[in-house]
Image 1 (spheres, rainbow, N blue to C red):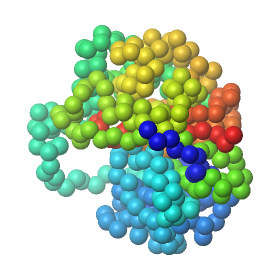
Image 2: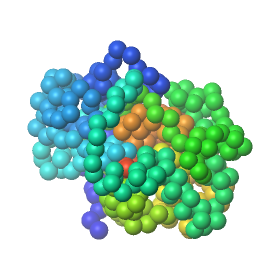
Image 3: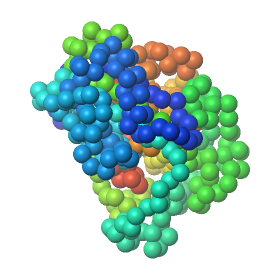
Image 4: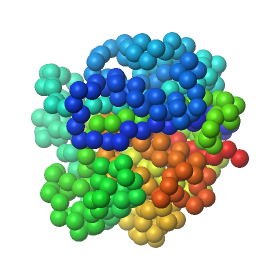
Length: 387
């Protein structure tokens, strides 16, 4: 496995406070706002951006998305693309930006995701394998599909509802250290998680992300450029990606996912073992996603995630390997595809050492994961501070 040299770094981050609904604002406006924050954080102007990566869900335009965003922002990039990996799109943008820089196509890439939320528009008819083989048999939507994965995991390893609830409670606890989190001021212990309404058995309401409006942006540039910025550069040390299927009916495995090889590749490129990673910024659309990621990362054996969490001292900043200190998406909220980018932004904060009350002592390394569709599109990053 070829190791990545730290030739690129994250020099700027931006994040909008999540809200339940937006009025009188477009997705393009939100993307502009959060991008301005990221550029300001990097200490650069838009004229220094020559690369652009955006997501596919910009409501104002169904195609030519990079061109539309470039025009709106006043950019003329030498590299642009649309990254469509669901919740893995954010982390997927980071290594693609680094690859484009390494290929000499650009020097500074703006990676941006976001969405507004108002009255949803009716969906148009859609015929594809997902519609043909899943909804007719009851597997309609993410809740039902992830419930199936959770039930399979419970049946295979004997895990209890209380085990998974530890993850939701930990996310809510971490959210109390983040004033921007949607559930700030609303902690929930294991008993309260289990007392929340059953949405799709065995998933309770508090084990499922709350969709919100918001946005996140990251600036990736050369290591040399990043040294000139106002913040400590955060280097990309390793990356991995894997897609195995689209819908749960086609999943090759219901208790382990594509993050397993993706994380293995990212760690191998970084030259680090999982035990050397200080912060775990793990995609958490549902509690089952965190459970399988802990196991697939090699932190414990199959079905042992709850015991590992207890031995780890929970998920907070004082844990041996803290998890999702910003509250994760279960505590912070999920601003659509930008939900995956929130995990990148929090990892950067922690490595910079400016996470405030939730700062992890001596945080030099982070594992960031992204997950799209139904545990099917996976991206893993290893980030580290400049030495």
